[in-house]
Structures are given as structure tokens and as C-alpha cells.
Amino acid sequence: MNQPKLLVQNISKTFSERKGGKTTEALRDISLEVNAGEFVCLVGPSGCGKTTLLKIVAGLETASNGRVYLDGKKVIAPGPACGLVFQEFALFPWRDVAGNVAFGPEVLKLSLSDQKWLTEKFLTLVGLDGNEHKYPAELSGGMKQRVAIARSLANNPEVLLMDEPFGSLDAQTRYLMQNELLRIWNEEKKAIIFVTHSVEEAVYLAERVVVMTAGPGSTKQIYPVNLSYPRHRTDHGFISLREKITASIVEEVGTI
Amino acid sequence: MPGPQGIAWAGELLGNTLVSLWRVFIGFSIAAVSGVFLGIIIGWWPKARDLLEPVIEILRPIPPLAWIPLAMLWFGLGFKPAVFLIWLGAFFPILLNTVLGMEGTPRNLIEVAKTLGANSWQILFKVGVPSATPSIMAGLRIGIGIGWMCLVAAELTGSNSGLGYMIMYYYSTMEAAKTVAGMLMIGIVGYLAFIGLKKLENRMLFWRVSA
Image 1 (cartoon, chains in turn purple, brown):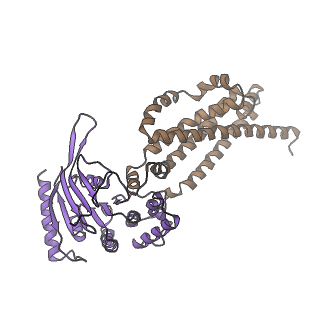
Image 2: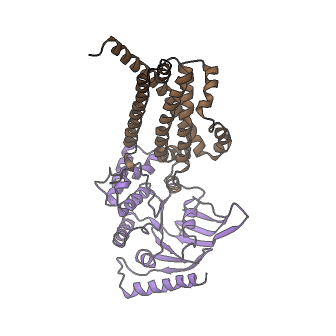
Image 3: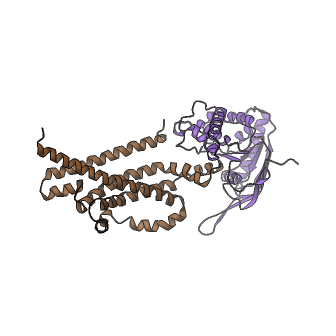
């Protein structure tokens, strides 16, 4: 039997507020399978719990119900097997570019020479050669996100979780980074779960697009994207799928 | 050329300045180490905070000046009570700023470190402490200013050397010029300490300067 890389099984999450015993249901019975090397995008209305789901998959939050399996093993704590890339980059401002990328290998106590070549390898992969000694404050948004991606990859994660990574970039940089990400994905063959607000971005990048319902979030529908790479945003197939998914989300927003 | 009297006076001024500087150096160093150490603990572990905060918040509002009589009872005159008062004055701003800095460690940096495989000690020393450094440096700068003020207060009453003592002594002999000279010296040394710490801060926090 072919075991999926990542198995999300009946995840529910309820947050309880500190006062008054009020509870908020963020996720309801979500299940999802991601195969090795697969690129999956999650889209849905704001507040549908996409970020919460990523954090549960990463082991940063515990689910109220359900389980997450990575390579058949239950995820109970965060660790290097799941790389996480945030929208706001979350670089360590006191470390230079090389120091940020080396953080993972360093805390995992790899030898200095391994730290060095991993850092070099992934800085080259994301196109940041020659910027090793710059500090985050000196970098543009696109460069910061390249550093964050290189930092995640340097740990050789099984799955890369990306939480609206290009959400704060301008349109030009965003298009550029989407192509860069596809190139990196092609070279590294990691499974990627990518959360985005933009249906266009999802259809451009993913092999499967998962549409979530408005809060409490659950999977509404999964759309396979049967378009070959590189994709063109003006193709008939691209546009019709984009419209179909958009309509599905609008329907959700309308029910709130 | 200054006469023998002038040279003696210059020597007296310099000698008292050095005495005061030494006291501040020792008191401030103890305050820096104890304040940062305790601040890291209180700012990082909520349980330590719950335990220690009441004690600290009771002691903190007591002005260092109110401690002078007790300091003299405990330590007598001279070096020890002065160092104690300097420590007392510098300790709280250093402690509170360190706590603030540790508590303000961005959550997403901690989460990123976790997903990169850092254990809890690595998160403390590779994320919490560096992230708190700007705040710690601000605390040190405030601390040395207050420590310097406490020194003078301590020397005004509980000492027979140092700049504070000198000011008081020439007050009693009605030599206003020498009193003012002592005051100016306190101002100048305080300013130099401020500049020194500012430089150290800029060097340590170079990463904050954006292009």
C-alpha cells in the first residue's frame, strides 16, 4: 500500500477563552492526505482556521481531536521534519543571512563544515549568493522570504508548510517568487502545503487546491489542477478553474 | 603655572573622582550581573515571575535614599555602603528592562526556532536573550545613571571620600567654587559613562540599523 507522506486525520480544534468559559470552534473534522513531493494549496475565507491547521500539522498547536501522521508516525511536537515559513518572514534580526540559514543545522549540532556547505547550498538555491553577510534589516521583502525558505530547507524537512508566504509582497515580487518556488520545488521535491488568500496563486502553484469552509473550518471541496507547468494565467483552463474555485469561496463567505 | 596649592587641589579632585568611579564600577557591575540574570529567569518562566514579582514590587518603590541609614548600620562607612546603594539603585531598572525584553520575545521567532529543531535551552539562549538585548542595554544605560546618583547620595552622608563627600566638605567650609567643581565633575563623568554605554550599545546592536 502506498502510504501518504502526511496524513491529517479528523482534526478538530476548539479554543476556550480564559474568562466566561466561551469557546470558539476553529476547525471541524478536517482530513487531508498529502503525498511525497506533492504541492497542495489551502484556500478559504479569512478566519477559517488555515493558520491553525498549519500549526497543528507543524506540532506547534495541539488538536482537540484527531491526529497528524508524518511518514506513518504521529506528530506530537514541533521538529525539523516540518519546515514552516511565515508571511512575516520571522527572520532572526540579530543574525546575518548566513546565520539565519545555519540556525537549523546549528541547533541540530551538525559539524561546522556541514553547517557551512548546507548554508551555501541553499543560499545558492534561493539565489542569494553574495548576500551572506547582510542583516535582515537590509533586505527587501522578497529577499527576506528567500532567506526564510532557505532556512527551512537547510534542515531537509519532509514537508514544507507555508503560511501566506507571499502575502506581504508587492505584485511583481510575488509573481517572481511564485516562479522561484516552483523551481525550488522542482529541484528539492518536497511536499508543500501552501496557505493563500489568492485563488489565482493557488491555481498557479498547486497540484491540488483544497477549499475550506468558513469558520469552523473544514474541507469543502478539493480541486485537482490538471494543468501542466509552466502554467499561464490567461489560458482558458486556468481561468475557468480559477472562477470555479472563486465561486465556491464566495458561496462560503455568503453563508456567514 | 599652578602653584603647589593648585596641584594639591587637582590631586584631591582627581583622587576623589577615582574613588567614586571605582565604587560605581563595582556596584554597577554587581547590579548588571544580578539584574540581567534574575531578569532572564523572571521574564522567561511565568512561575518564577509569580513567585518573585511580589517581593520585587514591594522593594522597588522604596527609594535608595531611604536605605542609607540601614546601609550604614549594616556596612559602616565608606566603600561597602556606597556599593550597596549603587547596586540598589541600578538593579531595578536593569531587572525590569530585562524582564520586559524577555517577555517581548516575538512568538513567531520562538515557533520558527521550534520547527527548526531547537530545544528549550537553545530557544532561551539563541532566541530569547538576543531578542531581549536592546531592552537589556536600555536598562544598563538607565541603571548606570541612577547608580551614579545613588553614589553621590551615599557619599554625602556615609563616607569620608569621593566626590559626594568633597561637595559636602567644601559646603561646610563655604568654598562654593570647589563645591561646584565637584558637581561639574559628577556631571562630566556621568556623561562620559553615558557615551561609553551608547557606543557599546551601537556596536552590539548594529543589526538594528537599517540600510
